[in-house]
Amino acid sequence: MKRVPLGKSGIEIAPIVFGGNVFGWTADQEQSFHLLDSCMDKGINMIDTADVYSAWAPGNRGGESERIVGEWFRQTGKRDQVVLATKVGMPLTDGSEGLSKKHIIEGAEASLRRLKTDYIDVFYAHKDDESVPFEETFSAFEQLIQQGKVRTIASSNYSADRLVRALQFCKDNNLPQFIAHQPEYNLFDREGYEGPLENICKEFDLGVVTYFSLASGFLSGKYRNADDLKKSRRADFLDKYMTPRGLNILTALDDVASRYRVPAATVAIAWLQSRDTVTAPIVSATSADQLQQLCSATGLELAAADLQLLDDAGVE
Image 1 (cartoon, helix red, strand yellow):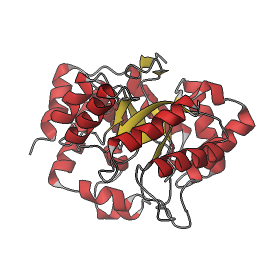
Image 2 (cartoon, helix red, strand yellow):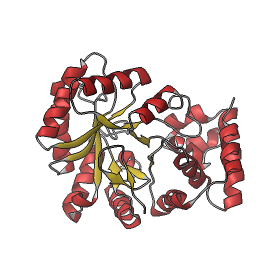
Image 3 (tube, rainbow, N blue to C red):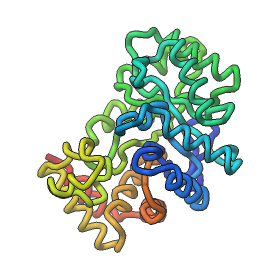
Image 4 (cartoon, one colour):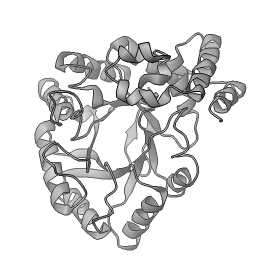
């Protein structure tokens, strides 16, 4: 699978990133190991996880995903084949959260222990924290980079205004800058990224790695009514997509998918990969077959008319 640069980091990744939010949630350790093995076989070299994954699942406390990835590293010895991304800043079950220096340093150390590694390739500020001065946040990241525990840093869930201010602050004060941004972006959720945020990512040459690339699985076409939702452990994530606009998007995906004889999920990922500013969508799967469908998007070039049809389907 062809590699693409992740912003100006010097890191090259496959045009698809595997999302480890499923590890310890919808995929147990054995399934997770099979998925990680499949990623390596298919050339997917970036794995995305977070300290908070998957605290929302009954019985979980967070850190489950990192522990599974770390155990896979220990058993396979393939740490050097992976571009490893994890995150800090979201509320944890012990009540800690945010981007204070103390929490960033302690969060990194805890993630390193769970991941059974001595460095993180891309360490994300998972959520903006306006209560902490930029100087404190980025001095913490600088310390981790100087210690060799973090290679690069990136952002997620920042507004356009706060992101540009953070980038400019680091530039003016010779502090480490974000090399990538992770926005929620897919055929349904477009307003939050397209426009000012996208322009900033382009201006500062940030890699863009999209999350919820399939709208929590909605764009796979598996969920079309309330009965379908009842069958999914993702129901809480999916409910907002059950609108006339959402169903219009599914109809357009069905139309295009039938022309190319591929699943709707493949088309949804190919649409993301056609966007000029998107480096790589994050995808999640619970089986090798699902993963293959998503990987097939890298070889699917949609005609201009089909891209326009998909664009138009989401217009209200």
